[in-house]
Length: 99
Image 1: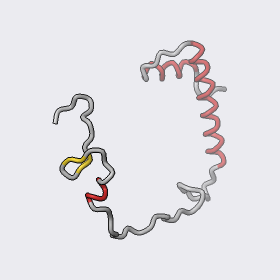
Image 2 (image 1 turned 180 degrees about the vertical axis):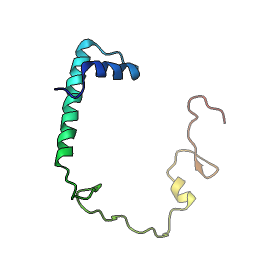
Image 3 (image 1 turned 90 degrees about the vertical axis):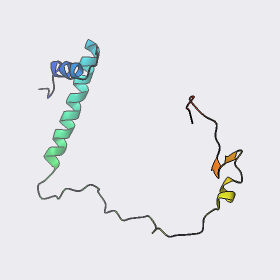
Image 4 (image 1 turned 60 degrees about the horizontal axis):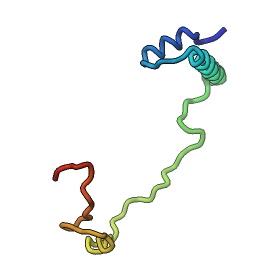
């Protein structure tokens, strides 16, 4: 017995404003039914004595701590720029935007 019918897929398509052909309705009904069956199998396996988790392995933070360090001066950062204006990169105006 299918968990989702072709009529239910057609109803979902109407709600989503999707125009599906008859072949697409049959195809998606089959696919959605397979997905629902797979989720049901996972639900059967999940035991009550197993605590829920978000990852299979424990995670640790792999990022280094933030530390203040010497960085480029504005002159150094802009030294290779093709155009500079007011200590900033000058780029061409796009999409006709006004300043």
